[in-house]
Image: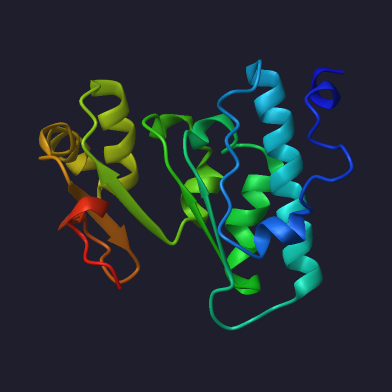
Amino acid sequence: SDLFDLGFFDAGTDSLDDLMGRASILRLSQLPSEGVKRALGSIILRSAYNALLRAGHIQGLRLVIVIDEAHRVANLDPTIALMREARAYGAGVILSSQQPGDFDEKVISNAGSHLMLQLTDTKAAKAAAKIMAAQSSGVSKTADMIRQLPTFTGLFRNNHYPHSTKVRVTPHFEREEA
């Protein structure tokens, strides 16, 4: 009953179509428990997935779903379905976490690109290195690199850059208004 006591399903709240039609931020961090966060996250992600299916295939990008602290929902069925199929329906999915070891192999293998920023925790850096290293023999070296990355610098890998490439991420406060 916790989920329904929070008022998310009351009349007068925005529909998912309203939320998907504009830039929207859903902050689940203030919810009372991890169980409620996971349940509501699952409902929202399943609803987004179903909305994309109804909208049909499209060339280009119509929606980007960004999930911070994604280790909480990364291995839920709706997230895995979005990772597998979202591109065909014009959606991108960005998962962000300081715990890359919590991601299921299905999530990792369906990500078109990987960007790893500095992770000082040895276990987290090693998990990230397993994702980024072109060969298992390079995991230790890659983990060391990830632990020592400067601020706003990361390792990037995708089909165009199969070996990790060092990149600089421009922070929002350095960007010019478009």
